[in-house]
Length: 106
Ligand SMILES: N=c1c2ncn([C@@H]3O[C@H](COP(=O)(O)OP(=O)(O)OP(=O)(O)O)[C@@H](O)[C@H]3O)c2ncn1[C@@H]1O[C@H](COP(=O)(O)O)[C@@H](O)[C@H]1O
Image 1 (cartoon, helix red, strand yellow):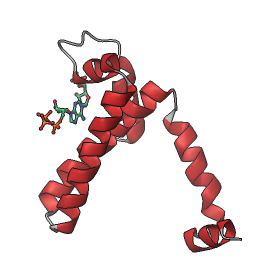
Image 2 (cartoon, helix red, strand yellow):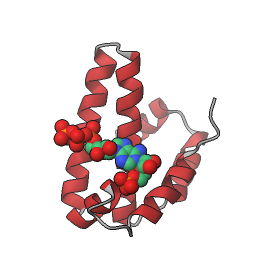
Image 3 (cartoon, helix red, strand yellow):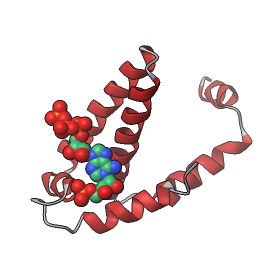
């Protein structure tokens, strides 16, 4: 078990975004801009999908970590706080995903 949370990761990303890009992957991605960071997020998503389909637990754990980290960077560049995303998830807790999907089909 670990006490590490996504809020901790958000704080790290926030702090490292202002670092020297030659010393920080976070700062490098932020300096490169959203298209580059979002593309990297997409790559990590595909690698996560492959690990999941191959039922490779170690790879899935590692790729999921890469995915969450790159998502935090993309959110940072987009000016979206983790709390905003959690708030959206909380808003959805009152309804099942099936019911929500059905409500969009009219
Ligand atoms: N969690 C991460 C994290 N996960 C992945 N990465 C980096 O993301 C980069 C891309 O990962 P890839 O697996 O795609 O590796 P790659 O060598 O670029 O592969 P290719 O795309 O070239 O095939 C690598 O440089 C990884 O080190 C991360 N970089 C930083 N963090 C966190 O951010 C903190 C600050 O890091 P810096 O900003 O680099 O100081 C770190 O202490 C961590 O807590």
